[in-house]
Length: 197
Image 1 (cartoon, helix red, strand yellow):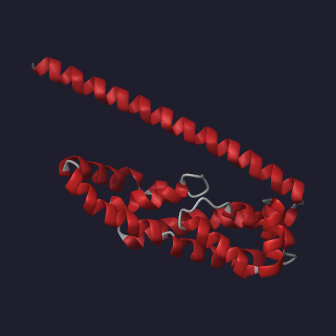
Image 2: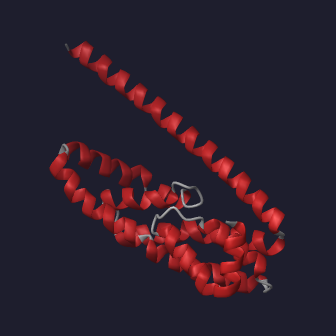
């Protein structure tokens, strides 16, 4: 994959980078981070040009995240027909109150693209979704381009390996924490029911 990405970006240039970013942002399983690192590696430009490229690349990413956001928006109508509307409304309110920053914070992680679906289902206002997505992806895109630009292929590969392991560890930790919170919540509910009954 590394050699394919290198050959593809050398032939297609910045349009290839934008295409790779668009594919990843639309939540297809595509290694957009790898393409950003390699593009940074093959570019021999000033730091300012890398920042401008990152800004443009982040716009492309943000635009294409509207695809899964829109799908999520459509799924929200379907889910209200199939599931309890009160529970769905409660989950939507919780996400709007506590989870909107996860739109920005999760972008560097592998689950970041799937937050777009949750945002659509939760009916996050589109302007907030766009702003938080851009705020999350711009620093990550800039970092990847700079690391690629300053390193060599071995450094790029090492960075990808480390970030994948850290992302996996973080996902597992979040799942465990959410599971513990859910168990505590369920126990409290059961205790309250038994005290009332």
